[in-house]
Image 1 (cartoon, rainbow, N blue to C red):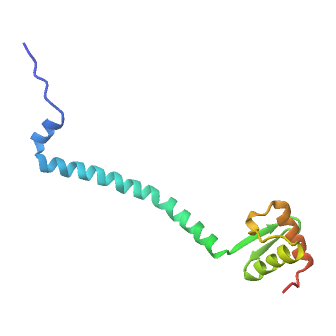
Image 2: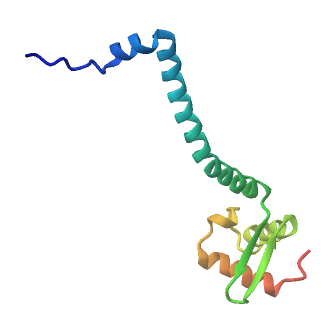
Image 3: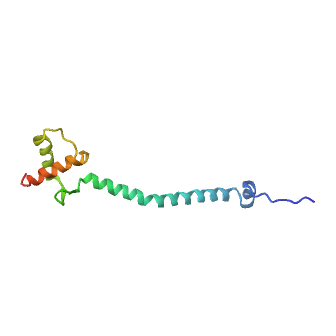
Length: 118
């Protein structure tokens, strides 16, 4: 006696539900996977965009450990820093973020000594 095992492959599914329905089934499966991926990626993309916007504005606060205070970086601070780099130290301009921690600290010491700098 031979026992017949039902065919559960794609061909059987195609015959059972029809070609158009199979295409729709595959489309829905892929689309739902895409929606899940988008939902999981959205918080990461939002966080990265917010951080980039923050850098773009150059609206930073820096903590000065030696004097235990914060310095708000704005156009006035940027001009003072440029003066310190080029006129006081006779160095080429380098962005503050790219200075070593020691040089950043030297700037804050100078800045506290020259708080009236215009």
